[in-house]
Image (tube, one colour):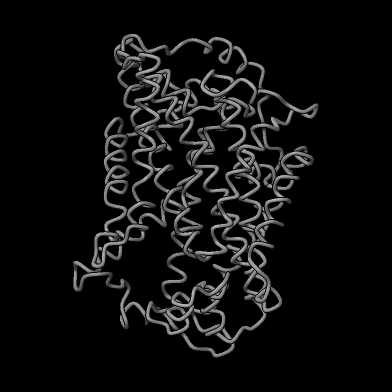
Length: 460
């Protein structure tokens, strides 16, 4: 994010990541990343619809209804929102995001109370479960090897959860005062991760032991929705009966809003590809409201893959989509690191002092190389469990099919268009920059008039 933030504040471009890859590295990389982003959004759309259909089955009234009915309803609602109600997209996403933030903050406060003995049972848990059965569960192996494999197996889930953080910079070309707001947003990604993800993981880790029979039986049975959530299990253990349905409703709204968001972003990725001449021109047709209906329709058609849940099982299909999405996202992050390394070399080759930049990320380019190495390691080894006895073809394919897809896109465009790797001296760092520099002079300076505005300006 630091690397992307530095590039986005130097030259805020619509579509950001594919543009940076094409401008600083190779046109073929820009093409591959652009289509990879669309593919990632489309598959994530499937994952979110699958998740929402699973979540609905948490309530007893939905158990006897075929899951295809819920998938159909969610697809129709999401498509209609993207075609007929796109004007309220921003407001709807703001409301959904607010609900999620309020919920996680409430859960963290509740977790602290329960851990300190504030629940109905008044049992002070502390870090009891980190001693027995332990903080880390062994996976496949035993001892230190098993604990390491257990940790490594969580990286794919973690990468899936972090997917989309790069959207902060993707909107740079359309953001208000990007050279002020993008650095602010990039810096706050760390605090969001720390608050929502790290504290959330810590909370469930101290409240629920990994060998809890309810957790294990729910996972084994493929229980629906919040039934296998450690938050819900912690609430049941504490004797608070009302909250599980509320949490499940929040999860449902979260999955549905994410499906809506990924259909929107996926269709816009496809539209941007058509604008750049990397997709058929008919995709540029829009409605009177400016909705690229062909792009929406084609992206939405991928969601029909979610009907595989009817025969294979919604939980299994969700895990397939999760793996596919995660690998696509990791390729995007690797491409960001490569683009930044080239950007860094270009600044040096063209005599531009990084100390003059609006936003200068620290410890570069070493952190970009370290991040690239880490992401590449996850891509290569993410499906290690498929090789365990017995060999799983399904797990192998879903873990590694994203790799040939990306490289086929890259080399196909490179061979067809005869693109070449760009020398740092020849990298175009300036086209479009003068107009953006001039626009910076017209943004009003926000001066807080009281403490409430000061807090709000810091948050927003």
